[in-house]
Length: 214
Length: 86
Image (cartoon, rainbow over all chains, first blue to last red; front, side, top):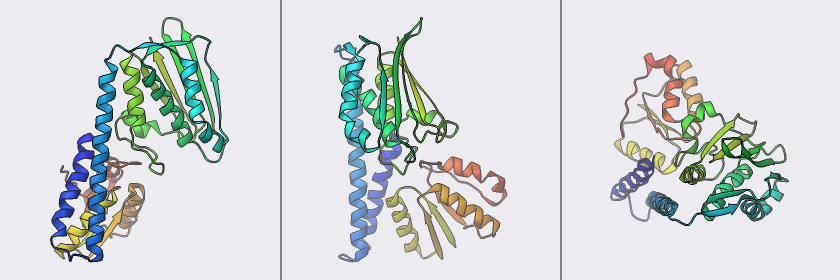
C-alpha cells in the first residue's frame, strides 16, 4: 500500500512531465498539466512526511519513557480539545472510568489513541441523529484492562472491510477527508504496550472499539 | 474503440486521458472516479451490449477496490478478460 502511494504520484509526475514536452507552452492544457504535476509532487511529499512521522513514532515506542498514566486525565484532555467539534454536532460523550485507573504507557501515545478514536466518532457521525459516544474502562478478572468506545455513527460494513480496518492508507468513507492514518497509529500504539484492539460494527449502526491491555 | 477509465485519483485519470487521446486510437473515453458508479455504468452497458472494449481499472480505491469490482462482474466473465499489471 505504501509502495502504491509512493509509486502512484511519482509515476504520474514523470508521465506528466514527459507529456509537457509536446504541449504548447502557455496553453490552457499546459497549465492544467502543470497543476497536476504540482498535485502529484504534493501527494508524494505528504506520503514521505507520513512515513517520517510513523518511523519517529515507532522509534519512540522503544524508549524507556513509559509511566503510569491516569486514563481519566488523558480522556478528559482529549474531550476538552475536541469540545468545539462535539458541541457543533450536538454530541455527548459519556465517560465511565474508575478513579485511579492507570495505564503504563507513553503519555503522548495514549493521547494519540483516544484523540484518533474520539475524533473519528465525530468525523463519521450520522448527520440525522445527535452523536452519542460512550467510553468505559474496567478491570476484568484475569483478562487485564478493557476499554470500550461505542458510538451511534455511520458504522462500517466489516464484511467488506475485512482485515483492512487498521491498515495504513485504507479509507472507508471517501466522502470524508482523511488519509487513512489514524486507526493504523492507534493499533500500532496499542500493540506497542502489549494490547489488542478489536472492532464490531454494522452500517448505520455505529461502531464499538474494544481495547484490551494486560 | 471505446475505453472506460476507473480510478479514484483525478491526476491518474487526467494522465490516462491525456496519453490515450494523443494516440488517436480511441473514439470514446469515459471516466469514473467513483467505482460504485462505474460498476452501475458497466452493468447497464452489459445489458445494452455496449460494453467498452477496454476498461482501465485501478486496484486501490475506497468503497470497493478493483478486485471487488471484478468479482461483481464474474457473472459476465465470458465477456470480460482481465489482465493485471503493476
